Every structure is written in structure tokens, then in C-alpha cells.
Amino acid sequence: MASRTTHRVLDTRSLNRATLARQLLLSRAEMPALDAVAHLLGLQAQNVKPPYFQLHARLAGFRPDELAGLMESRRVVRMVTMRSTIHTHTAADALTLRPLVQAPRDRELGNFRKGLLGVDLERLTGLARAFVEAEPRTMGEIREELLKHWPDAEPQALSVAARCRLPLVQVTPRGVWGRRGQVRLTTVGCWLGGEASDAEAEVSGAGVDGLVVRYLRAFGPASVKDMQVWAGLTRLRESFERLRPQLSVFRDENGVELFDVPDAPRPPADTPAPPRFLPEFDNLLLSHADRTRVVPADLKGRSWAGNQAYCTLLLDGFLAGLWRLDDAGRLTVELFGRATRQEKDAIAAEGERMLVDMAGGAGGAGSVRFGSIHG
Figure 1 (cartoon, rainbow, N blue to C red):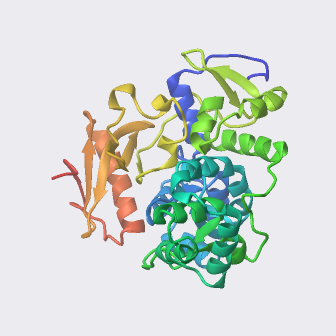
Figure 2 (cartoon, helix red, strand yellow; figure 1 turned 30 degrees about the vertical axis):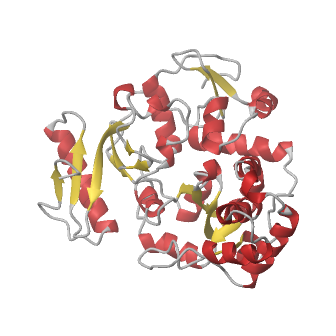
């Protein structure tokens, strides 16, 4: 193991294997879903199904009803946190992470200040809180309620103000596998019966430092800029410097300083990495400033179309293609390059496993096909 003062260079494959190990993608972990959600610091959840597929790629024996049960029992929740996007978090993280990412919410709200002229934000916060805590509300209902008090304000700005000022969660059945539900919101404190984590909550240096360590355990080795991209935060250098004596320090092939937790896994670069099917917006592909540890430079942008992400295939640990699952349970895999027969067989086997576990497919020949996902 490297000493805490070493600046050994980690090449791209070494970074890839280290990150996959932290992300539970080198081998499926024997871990409860709740523990995995906590370890991963949440699951990107812009859409309802991706968190379930993220856990299937990472956990042995995972079935959708495990996470659905956690949603219904309020042990995990959906809310806006990192990068101003919806994540599925444990109840404990929902209460503690939201204040840590309040600064970006304040900056976001600043973009709407012209539409909020004459609006008392403290009063708006109180009114919105009382309204959503009386019963969960849709964003449209929140907007209409606030317009009663500020009819000359810009309607969207009022909605944004409520979302940015309050720690709002999406209540079930939204987010529960196999169930439909309109997005209805209340405060995290009201939903969990705990102490609300408001915009006014004090954020201590110790809290930020703890988040740095947890980020490194889930995504490291990483640079300061990597974590800032993941969290949507700035000015994290101070925390890394406080922690420097406790961390291992490396450099990547471009000379960028990388930090890591000393006892975190850093497998050999030649460690086998099995194929994995990841859903759209998986945090593996979104949580570093330099994504070449997973996305080869020549494939940059291939997993996106506009502001929408495709479902992605990892082969030998790196982005190698896209996939689509249709309503009939047919899985189409589009490879970016050539694959050996052995690699295709491994991809098909992993796809069959996903069909059986997640899509209710019966498996068997023909369930997985190789071709264009747009065909």
C-alpha cells in the first residue's frame, strides 16, 4: 500500500479498477440495498427506474422489491441534492447532505431574482413549508398557492424559490417499482418525522470533511475538482488540505493531484472487469471532472443526446456501448467497436441475468440482440 506522502502515478487502467471497486462493479457485493445506497452516497434518480438498475449491477441477489420496500418504509427518499438533480438517499443522508449542498441552491435561486422582485423569501419559505406540510403537494399547486400572495411575481421563479429554500422530498408512490405516482412534495423533516435540514442549518467544516472522505471511498482516487463536479460545490480545497495528513496522495498521468483514503481498495490494473449494464445518468459516469477513467477520449459524448443520457454498457471496465430495453422485454445492445465472441457471450449472459431479475423476462435465446438501439 502506498504511503500517505507518496505521489506515485496512477495510470488510466489503475484509476478505472480502483473506481470500479469502490462502485461495487468489479464483483457484485453481498450487501443490503440500504447499505449500498449509503456507501454510494445516493443513486442518481432523475427517472424512477435507474436506481433499481444501478443496484442490480452492483449487488448480488438484488431484486426491485428490496429498494421499493425501503422507499415505502421511508428508509430511503428521493430529493434534489448533488448537481441540483434528484437522488435516492438513505433517510439519514437526506437529513444531513441537503444542508451541505445548499450553496448551489442559493446560486440557482439567484438566477431568478428578476422574477422575485418584491418577494420576501423568508415569508415565502414559511408559507411554502406550511402548505406542503399540511399535505404533500404538486409543484403546480405550490406555485398557485404562492401566486395568491405575490400575483405579480414570475410563476416559475416562485416554484424555484420553494424548491431551493426548502428540503423537499418526493413522496411515495413516486419512485416505487411497478407503481405510478405524480410528483408530490413535502419537507424531508415532515416525511421522516425528524428534524428538518433547512437552508438555515449550519454547515460545519467537520461535516464537509466527512463528506470528502465518503466521496473518496465511493469514487476515489479523485482530485479536488472531481469532487466539486460530483457535488456541484466550489471551494473544497480547504477541506482536502485539512485532511491531507490522513490521506494517500497520487498523481494521474497528466500530473493532476489525486487524493484517496489509505485503506480503500486499489486493485491491480489487470484485474478482470465483467460486463455491466448501467442505466441512464449512472453516477459512475458523472462524478469526475476527468471521466477518461471510464469513458475513453474518443467516445466522449457518445452516451448523450442533447441533455438526455443513454443507458450504457461497460466492457473491460470502460464505456463500450449503449443498450435499450423495450416494453416487450427485448434487450438491444449497440457496441461502439468490435467485440470477441467470448466478450459477446459474456455481455449476452449479463443481459439475460438483467432480463430475468429486472424485466420479468423468461430468458432464453433471442432475448438479447446486438444492433442499433435506434433501429
